[in-house]
Structure formats: C-alpha cells, structure tokens
Image (cartoon, rainbow, N blue to C red; front, side):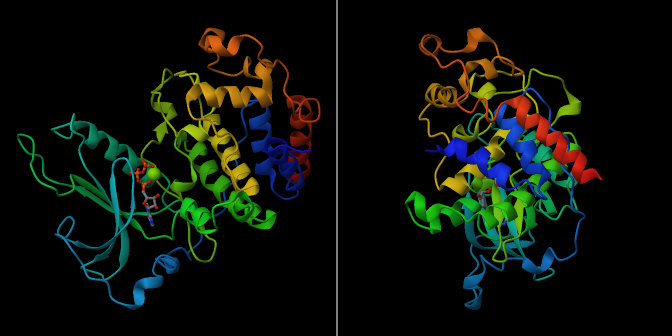
Length: 360
Ligand SMILES: Nc1ncnc2c1ncn2[C@@H]1O[C@H](COP(=O)(O)OP(=O)(O)OP(=O)(O)O)[C@@H](O)[C@H]1O
Ligand SMILES: [Mg+2]
C-alpha cells in the first residue's frame, strides 16, 4: 500500500521521461543535501497577452460597474478578484488603453504608520517582477506606484501602493476547490500534473537562475488560465540571495509547504526550500490533499519525520539537533520509510543518468 509520499516519488519516477526537472524535485525532497541544478528555462513566447482575463472574465459579457476612486488616477477598479495578507487584488481597466489588468493594492500595517516597511516590501516585489520580465510562466508587471509620501500618518481607505500586472485566470487553489471537497475529486490526472509542474518548475527555475528565492510557493500564488497556461505570482516574499548571506528572515512561507528547516525556525536556508514546496504542491495535485497536514510547526515536523526519519534531516543545511523539539527527540524514526528504494544515493544516481542522457 503506497502512502501519499511514496506516491509522489513514484510519480516523479513515472514522469521522468522528458521532465528532467521532476527528477531534480524528487531528489530534493528525498534528501536536501544535493543542490539542484538550475532548471532549463523555456524561451519567452509572445502569446501571453491574449489570455488576459479569459478564464476569470467569463462574466465579462455583462459590463461590470466600476467602483471607488481610480487607482493611481489611471486604473478603474471593477471587482475584487483576490485578497491576501497585504491587501486586495482587483480586476481593473486601464483608463488610457482600455486594457483589463490586475491591480494589487497594498496597505500599510498598523505598526508601520509611515509606510517604511511597505515601501521596502513593494520595492522588493517590483524588483523581483522586473527581473523576471519576459518569462512566460511568471506574471508580467505592467506598472506600479504609490501614494505620495506624507509628513505624518495618512488617514483614509485608499491603497498606499499598487502593482499593476497582466490579468491571468484564477489561482490554482481556486481551481482545486472548484473540483469538489473530497480528495478523489481534487485529484488531477497525471498528464495535467505534468503540464502544470513543467510550467511551474520553469518559473521557479528562472527565479533560481536569477538568484531569487520565492519563499512562498503555494497554490494560491499560482495562477492558471482557461487554457491551462500557468503563471507564478506573488513575488512579495522573493529574496535576492546574492545581496546578503544567511541568517535570513524566518518565518517565511505557509505552514503546509514549509521545508523542515523553516519549521525548525532556522534562519539558514537556501532555494531548496522552494523545491520542497514544489514537491508538496505536486503531491497535492496527485493525491487530492495536502501532503503533510500538520496543525502546527511541531505537528508538521512529526508527520515529516514519520516519513523521512531524522537521519536524512540531520544532514540538511540549517539543521541543528537542539532545534528538534524535546517531544520529538525520543522514539523518533531514524531511517526514511522511503529507503532503500528512494534513498538519496539511488535517486541521485538516476537523476545524473537522466541528465546525461538528456544532454546528449
Ligand atoms: N495577476 C493576477 N491575475 C489574476 N488574479 C490574481 C493576480 N494576482 C493575484 N491574483 C489573485 O489575488 C490573490 C492574492 O494575490 P497575492 O498572492 O499577490 O496577494 P498577497 O496579499 O501577497 O497574498 P498572500 O500574502 O496571502 O499570499 C491570488 O491568490 C490570486 O487569486
Ligand atoms: Mg499570495
């Protein structure tokens, strides 16, 4: 009987033909000791624009009413299409060109009355989007702006900053939820998972080649239009590794997709935290449910260790035995349940084999 985790690695094996990235992913999950080689990036194509709003615009026939002040004096809000921890995302129309776009409106936190933290967050997200410009599977930046700086705190409901992007379809999370509530209904066929994961790996591969970690990969930060074209979004947590050496900030990421070192609250980590999250997303698509469904950091660690054991984890970057919660120290599993079939050595061997074969 295969568990969901076994299944992930099994599927990675099944999918290996022509999908070198998936082998890199499987290896990264089984053991994080080896750093993955950059994923080959597909050349940018020109057909990105014509999917603007196709899937989320099914209601476009009836002209929606605009509401509120134009954003930045230029973009008229049409409807809220998403919200997150930093603000809301609107479908909006560009008053100058008539183009339908997505505008992410960001607001200052209560403890950031002068918007200094917000300003640096927006700058980081815009810089990351600019760096990724032209990639077919990363959402494209159109414009950005902010309210003029004030001498003191500003009272009001208007956004403090905004980022204008191409409008893509709904998020992968929305699409998963639309399939129903039980795991069976939420399971994606292998061919679709291959298609989605290739695009996602291509996007994350580009970020890594550019020296950027995404740090918040999860289905709600992945957009998929009606034709199955996937675009990675929400680069708000993206971090340029070359600009600073660890320690890096932690907490980062969302609980079900956090790599063990993040769960251990380590501030020493690298881009392989993204690979872990990608594995969790792939398993979720195949299995129809979260790979590890912990309710807390500790609960997540228990579930991960039940599968992988501590021997593998001990070799990971950022691991410190004293970080393991006391409750996990006694009676913990030593060896990976996936060993020897999916030992890092074995997987690493065939990954290298596949790479050589595909390089020919
Ligand atoms: N370009 C876009 N086109 C269509 N929908 C989008 C676009 N950008 C974002 N969205 C929608 O808005 C939601 C929130 O966007 P985003 O993740 O960027 O905001 P956030 O505040 O940083 O979220 P969080 O921090 O909670 O992850 C997304 O999950 C998606 O549903
Ligand atoms: Mg988000």
